[in-house]
Image: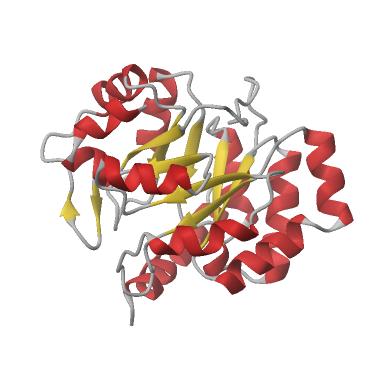
Length: 258
């Protein structure tokens, strides 16, 4: 069993536990805060204690101070891992970060069921991640609709041309376009440079897929950005932004770019 399949199997068990809990959706009191088009490079800084491929990423993990550092570095938003077993995150960690910043927050997890989307809205996230690789076409379409209804900005992660085609197909339907216009939320298409099956990274993945992404959506390059040369490469390809996680832990000076 691949790491991805193992993660998905465990996530389904977590979803079952959530479904049998006393979870009741209460709409958040705050207005969500989304990312928008900008003339400046944007970056989402990620809070990720560990990963299946690298183990512990930060030996001294102080999330509140991390958020302050990211804000001072000019981060446009913060990504928070909420998967506990494989990435060291949690809903409680997300809530702690929510109290520490007013920046847009992305809940980064493996979303497989609508109850997770309601949970994401309830913990006052601004953005939600949808990984095309792990969703059916019907799931992606329904999840996008629910996210927009709940004022969550969708970050749609793709890794291949076929996944990008599917995302664009669903985004282009009249129903989805109507919901986008009504919500005034601009979806983000994120090109993941990491293969989720092998965890290998190839920055060329972003360069090869960027041409097909319309300017009506935000485009972000995800994962594998280690230095300023990588950033130059990505922004020369006209991406709106990047999501940097482990790269910031290994090279804090990356934040000086922004």
